[in-house]
Image 1 (cartoon, rainbow, N blue to C red):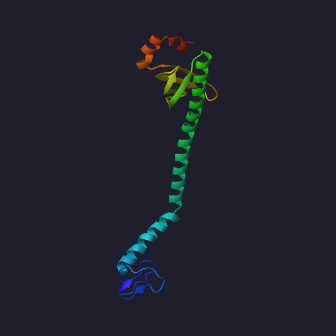
Image 2 (cartoon, helix red, strand yellow; image 1 turned 90 degrees about the vertical axis):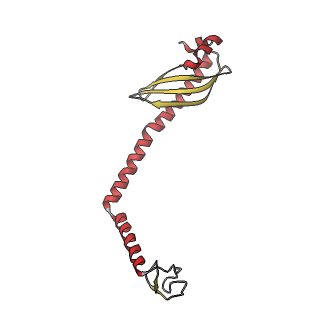
Image 3 (cartoon, rainbow, N blue to C red; image 1 turned 90 degrees about the horizontal axis):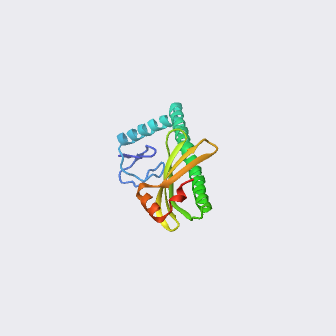
Length: 162
């Protein structure tokens, strides 16, 4: 004799469905049904536990706070620094197109980053340093070591001096 895995009712041998609830007969024994119900009961107890919910809520708050703080501020700062770099180079009569830009938060209000760009048709990478006080920032950038000789050779070094 089998028992329904959903409601526990007895199912006659050869029956394909439970006569009580219509659940397909999987041939479960009474011991399997009891074990399944105990497992469900333990999970239900966990769901109804105040401490489980408190821990879950605290974890969600911690994760949300850690993601909200740095990421959005860095994204906003990246956008502002990129625009400032493009504007300053335009003032100096050059065309700067930034194709990739990433700032990494360092200690305190300091950020460092790398800008992959094209300056007057020449591809290069720029090291970027930013100090941000929460309302305004100061940024400096210069070609990475790999591109410094090329900048001097092309006569573009005056673009990186104040």
